[in-house]
Length: 180
Image (cartoon, rainbow, N blue to C red; front, side, top):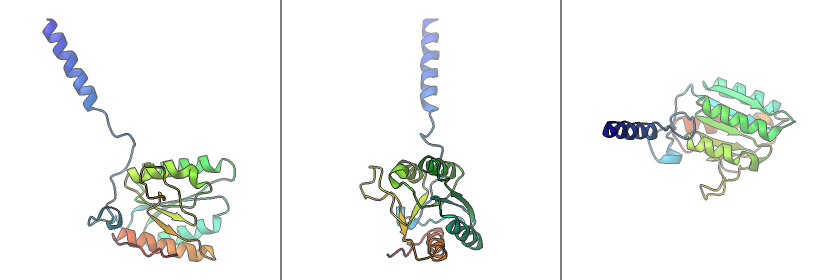
């Protein structure tokens, strides 16, 4: 009887330890050539998340139009002026969980988004900073958490066109031209 009880307890313990899932709820990683040297990219109609700072409404509208026109499924979020950093972090997390394959980020407080961007990386989401770079969270050693950067242009329309071009390149699995 004792042997049976011990066997059942050991089997239950092994089953429970084997049932632990990943530490983050994340979509299947994107394999883009610039990150993993695989043959990747992502679907032409993929969700592309956009997280913008307060005051970026014109950029939001231009990105929504440009990404939709390119065939993507954009999910654009502009943070409110109150609790901006918290709302941007929530938006990054929500977009990763929703299965975004690429994420465009204009951080109001880049340091506050470093952890969220690292989570996006861990989920295989390609991150593109718009404007200022997003600092690393300390795990990559590269000094910037975003995989690519689109410098802010003189107008929102120009910035949006450059960002859409980067996403198109990433979708095809190509290294985008993001020269400053």
